[in-house]
Amino acid sequence: MKSYVVTEFGTPLQAVETPTPKPQGTEVLLKTLAAGVCHSDLHIWDGYYDLGGGKKIALKENGIAPPITLGHEIAGEIVATGPDAVGVKLGQSYVAYPWIGCGQCPACRQGREQLCIDPRTLGIRRPGGYADYVLVPHPSYLYPLGKLTPSQAAPYACSGLTAYATLKRVGEAVYRNQPILILGAGGLGLMCLRLLQALGGHGAIVAEIDPAKRQAALDAGALAAIDPKAEKPKRLIADAAKAPVAAAIDFVGSAETARLGTDSIARGGRYIIVGLFGGELTLALPLLPIRAISIEGMLVGTLAEFREVMDLVAAGKVVAVPLQERRLDQADAALRELKAGHILGRAILRP
Image (cartoon, rainbow, N blue to C red; front, side, top):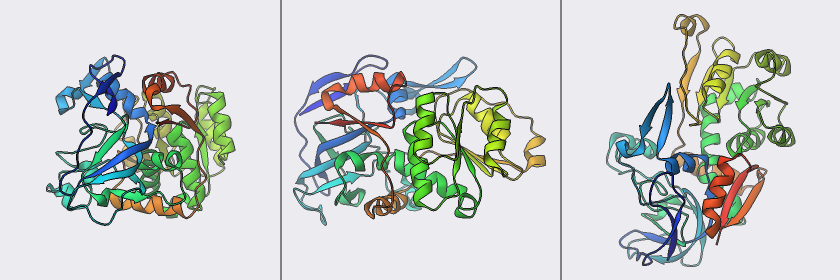
């Protein structure tokens, strides 16, 4: 089979030919039908995270090193199964939950595999969807596509799941009754807007520097879309909200968006950071208890939440975000498009 692989951090993906895996035990082999191109793929491709102040953390320090076959938003058709894989059928198509843990640590035993201390994440620790085939360790990580196309389904394994799980942290009592702030209108931001609608949310103000993405946010149902580089963006957000902003979700994760997010929430509000753009945030500590705000990091959702969001999508309650399809052999170019900010919505690789 052919895979498009990070053979050295910061260099172009390489096409690599390897034998097609043969599933053992409970394993399932998927023929890749669609693989989402996620912004976190860029950080893995680069090989580090920006900690701000000229500091970086290398992925190698966390045991992530080339060769890496990227792609953790995967939809595919089952073409082979191990002898102990039950509940799935050859020829059927599924979307895979990629945030697979060891199954033994406290986080895994609590159903929070995405926080596992020894993860087996597809597309990061194990080969992912930038390849002809993907090996999934157990059928429990698969959700049937049903009437969904592979391109529609794949982004919910990360983009959709992350946005859904973050809205759950915000809480139904908040998002149904008060406006929230969404920082960034890339694939995650637009996905969050669509899910907010599906969940009966009050609405969101979006802060985004790209005019085309601001328009996309308005098209996706944003109450308002403001330029965070405009004069007094906090005032623009407050004027658009017409009510206290109870929560801010930061899908960018830069020093600038973090500052705007923490400044914009009301007393008792919550700032949740998802994006990994990088930087650092300095806070006046007395203001945390005085304002009674909370700051939370969010990685991605649980397997149970994956099933919840897929049930919502399968029921036809979620409007799809814009999808930009590319051939699988254009994986490197798609990454470069995403890095340059030229992808509106989600890029999807197809065979």
